[in-house]
Image (cartoon, rainbow, N blue to C red; front, side):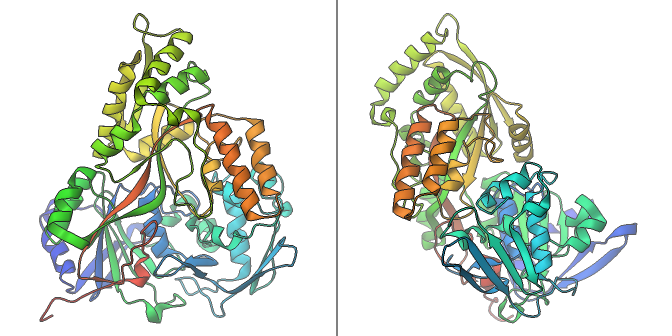
Length: 546
């Protein structure tokens, strides 16, 4: 639905009504033919602010936290997370591994249906995994399932019949693995592994995610999506745990300007915001106390080198540009101490993993700068011939500040950077198509294991956007996965990471933290790693007298 000028003038009053828990009626775009359907969302309505317009709500194509939070509301997989972020059964009522660890069997809950009332069967789950791994889908997170027998081959074009995921009956899904993966159920908490509605996708194609067309299976359904303005979901009465969902609806307000979100929060227009500018941390803590929540979130803020494009195919150039970046200064001055300097891929809050930083991390920044100048000189660059490099970043203020600072640091060692900003969609599109020299990116763990970060530089991984490949690293990761104990695997992966980072395939800058503002009227919010509490666990207090 296009928003006219009259509706624009009523936005503030409309949002405030929702913020006070009053009745709210929303008009959602209809399906084919341009018709409309009125969807009522009344009573317990939560307003969530989120950075960036989601590029898509297709779980197999989505990327970024904005898409993730909404998909968590709209869909649920075999496994999911509880209100405290712990793994629990989702569609699966029970699950078990075989003695050798190579077979996992999941039994689904009885009576599962999609939001359109049609039965949700084990065959639907299998079809969804086939779609996820089909190379025609081009799913970014397909590599997360490469431990499943035949998954890698299918993702590279082999027949779907080779995939080791089957439904022996309508209530059972069986996974055959290439190797034992003790944390396999944890992988299935990722929102990329949720089932999607075959009956709608085969009919509507890429349009299946439109409001009025989308069918989902989670706690909420999509009723309205006004681009760059709001996304509205309402409680799904067909959700298997609908009786325990307290909210009647959620309104998401996307914007690239996190400062705008803070202003809306201060005005009482939103109840939760999922990010705020780091420079406002001190002010917000002083004025909002424990409404400010900062916690580790298994995330990496980094830059991709286009290693297929000269001169960034030269490891000396990549190393020089990395050494020139004063991570300590960036985390203290830009991030106000709310981030950890990064020299590796894997954050410190990944359970059971001990990182082995490269030798350059132990140098003083002055020594790193001297070494960077020498390396650029060896590569043929310096004061007389500065290295030309286009530095791309997204339009968030935090990213801009980091990019400007890095540009100055690069100038100091003999580079001539050009800075270019794009919106989130432009950044992701150009990164995936290889249209960049150096480009800002961010990665959050879809599940608690170092492998998800190591895949960022692994050969032929869908999440490796650098063009970098090292068969020795790939072999080391495979060898680690074959080890008999998890402790031995973790140690081997740490060695592999240390070795591959001497080639500087990417430029890690810092490990991120979740910076949230949560209103006292929100009930059920818990402080947890990642801090993306699903809306199904939340409610809002009604205004006194309502």
